[in-house]
Length: 253
Image (cartoon, rainbow, N blue to C red; front, side, top):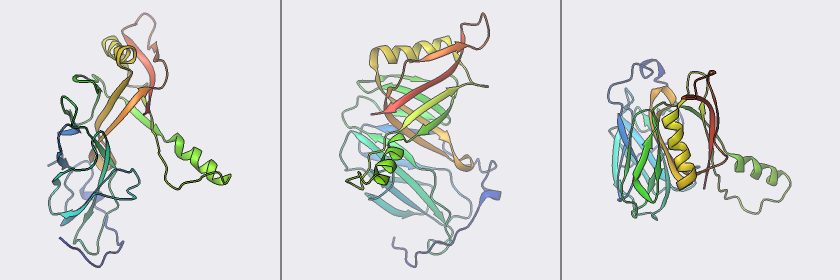
């Protein structure tokens, strides 16, 4: 489908697409594929006539290998790009495909590796660890942590650019992902044991989530990471070694 007259007029569906927009929101979604038939699914947005879907090998979408308009909140395609790496995708709703647009959605991601033994599908608002060498070995977190992402290399490149040392405009941005088990969140001892098992025996793991983002619209995310530091947790109360609080950081490789 070809759409002309592209401009940036915005519309805002927040009053009708906030917490009450629960119908049609996906409850499960794949975040790791071992075959090239890809199915993307997102929360439908009321009054939307068309969605622009973009898929890229780059987080800034400097180039895309899929860029299409679709009329429903799902899109299937064959991914023929190189195997064994992460893809990024986003959607942009439009009332008419010509004039009225929302901003781009939160960026989601999936991993494609045709050599993997299994795929990984997550429930909504779930975190998981998986062993790339044995995809049957995956662990879903019993409690959902909050998390932060720090793109340290991006700030480093800004500093280099200020000093006149940056030789290329193309940046490789690696995420540092920190899971926060603090406040109302905590780790139970069996969950901590699973984290330590991956840390001691696997070290390089998939970290994946399918979480609610902007306006309760969940998006999948996946990282291939290493534990960036030794796990360090403390008891949330004296005499309760089964309940732990703290943070754990993973660095994208």
